Length: 229
Image (cartoon, rainbow, N blue to C red; front, side, top):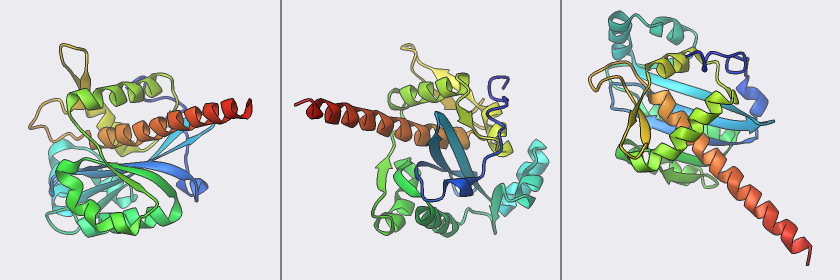
């Protein structure tokens, strides 16, 4: 948390300042009674700006607030977390927010975990024709390199993400390694109610942004080479 809680990380960021700009999205859609997180990632002047939408069922929020003594009530009151009515997450509200973001920003790619998200993605794919919808593998081998790249951004202090709910999720995250030094982010133990969903959605969004930066650099080098002939 000492590496996370820096002046850069806590810098004020206004998403309205990014209107019309390209970004990359990551969606971690949990079970119907838990947190769901939508993350948008922008790059500007070498820094990566993250903006999150956190969703939780209202009934779960009250139980979680009492059990864990986190600031869910305050976050809901400030609009940092959206509490959807009833015992389950309102997927219709999430879809509406995604489509609204698609109108405000250029969502180049939208990464999602197919295990939970296919039914939601089916409802928005045709409505965002300029966005590439990308099913994102969550197995250890596939997610380890993006996790390490995101970790590197933290250590290089290149992330702007002052969201307090995200800070709480980062504090909950631990690393699960395998014998080959691949690793992924998990909760401290399987039955824990401390969530890490925002970390997962951030890794996905940042990975797609950096992957496209690499492609842009390759295309620029290729164009420069052609210009010599």
